[in-house]
Length: 179
Length: 345
Image 1 (cartoon, helix red, strand yellow):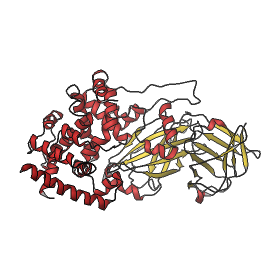
Image 2 (image 1 turned 90 degrees about the vertical axis):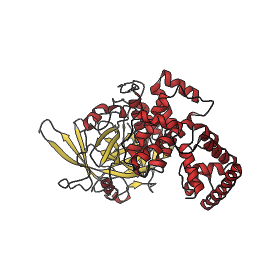
Image 3 (image 1 turned 90 degrees about the horizontal axis):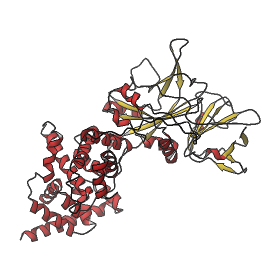
Image 4 (image 1 turned 120 degrees about the horizontal axis):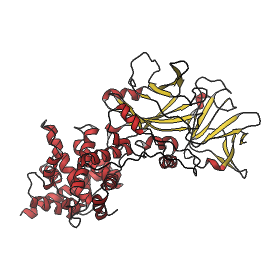
């Protein structure tokens, strides 16, 4: 099912669309949420957060512009924002905000400006594969070197070296661009 | 963590879909059926989407199987802890366990035939799900999955094989009749990277001499069988529908011994079987189990597990040979066990 077909299905048959979305992207969203909340939440809380993200997909289905980004990317970004927000709430012992509160996280509420984020994304992209993938797996999905190694079929110590070199390249790129 | 690493973490915490789309790294991850159903049910409930429940009781004359209605709603109401929608589907919540014992093809067949039970009973420490029951009205084979709900449940890991008990609800005597039922146990790994999601599955066979399946039965569990002692399974109870839901065929040898063939395996008692209790279990045994086709050719059983009786003396023990992906059992006219032929009559 294509992204547009899925988003259309939310209008005509939301139940089937939700089942398809959870079936297709549930694992990805769970992994992202787990990477942030796995050490501080019970499984039930993680699943609740994951379901919140799919509710947002349903509510925003008619606003998602697939020419700007895929549904997968939308869910990945939303999952990360929601998980970060939920982690902060837990750390500060704040009450869990209602679902509507999550709408605000979609635009990003961190310290970094949109320009700076765009710049870093471009620099990581310029590293080329597999370095950009490795950096994303390590710092977005919080995957361990061993896990990345297994997924890419590369030795763990090779991954560690690649991370070290990629970070050095990235540092150089960011400094050069700043100058 | 270096400044750059902190910056990267901050970037990824705050990246939008366009930036993530540029990086385009989305590893394929698959959810366990249970988690998938739980998330789906929670999402549709929160979103206010009508749940399309599939609780239709179907009967078909084409299939050799009598399709049973799902006892889902009643089970959920009995436990009272889980939203009713969460289990109103014909997919296994714990498919891993069913696949582990019966194979992927059989799991598909059971889902397509409406033989998904998904009945749940839980206490504060564990949640037990009755995944499926296959019964020919005489013999019943059940698969259960246990999930841990708290750290105390970790003691189950070390408890070894558990005991089960079966009560026949007797109208004539007005009281339950306890009987001992065997139960195998095996671990089914949780999904990767999710140490909280560990669970295990086990199965229970009820043989004709143990219980009359035409009566209502209750199933309870205990890790040691010392029923006066408190146990982590306290409060867990099932009254499953064990009425006939699959066809079986009885095959007879010249000496009079009988073996019954079901879609999940072979069962029988008082027949000459060349193994003892120590040899029961998974794996290929050095004995010949050959299915006989109508043209006389033989096919060896593969991927089977033998479970013998509790304390029976040869040749009086009863047994169940669980066979994975045994969907084509209609093709066979008999079975040869260690040189002795058992044929359909």
